[in-house]
Length: 412
Image 1 (tube, one colour):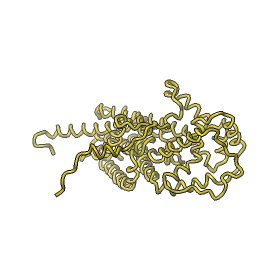
Image 2 (cartoon, helix red, strand yellow; image 1 turned 90 degrees about the horizontal axis):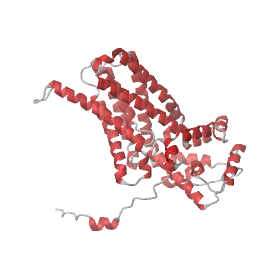
Image 3 (cartoon, one colour; image 1 turned 180 degrees about the vertical axis):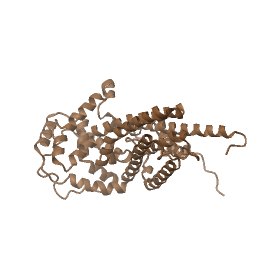
């Protein structure tokens, strides 16, 4: 029903543009998080972190607003594309692989967000049914189903990552992992060769320190989650233990351990580097590409029925999602979290072929990806530089709080 001072057609046009702007705002916030999430790790400057904080808030609000407006009251063919945008809003609610929470308080809300996810999924499916979307063009319907699966998984993945980042969960899960890592085992000759090669070098570099930090992660999680590291047996009795030549080598390992703890508490690392996480990231680019091709076919056949701005927004969502999917796949496969995952796998053949020698396929893949890294080629940035902290610590000035604060008004 129109307003008392605006015509019904004007109100409908304004509502349509609000919906389009909400979708574009959601995509823009998602893109900002993908590009600037590293600021949260490295910088303590409020001015530099404000755009990231703002994008995080928008990424949580804009998709929910868009989902509520993407399904008009009456179904029509011109609203098909609006219904097709819903899976992308779920995808944006799942955030990016390099950020799942902005603060520790976000991790405590995982159960409430799980309820929100269930409600949003119900709204999305009911809306698609009411719009007769699922009985429309088969190609567009297939693309909708594929992208809806990805959106649902990424959204659920983010909530599970928040749940895993809680200290209680860290205490229960990594305590078992620590025990397994420190149990005595036989080191194969290839791993022994790598350890001997490390000793020959004068100083431990950050890459080797990062690999060592993965093996000692149980110590850091014990400090954060408040449990003690108790070794009932001598660690790795029959194994070869790599000594640290310099004290600063130990500092490097500790710094890398803290960086890994950041991954656990503020990113999706705990859920990405699992078998389901790898499978979905391998499947995401082909699925999104298939959805893009199906939409191109739909555009050729029925594009004249839709407004040009809606077609452009749909292409923006599909192409942007495809590029980000490729990026997350490359980051996941080249990450040292994958190295730790392969070292822990029970498949001895896979472990040997991947990481137990310098010619393993993971080392070859990582060197290739580093060769393609533009920041490393153009600016000479080291491969582990994004994990180094800013050398500054934010502090609360108690003296300033006591002397500069405004006096409280008298009560009563």
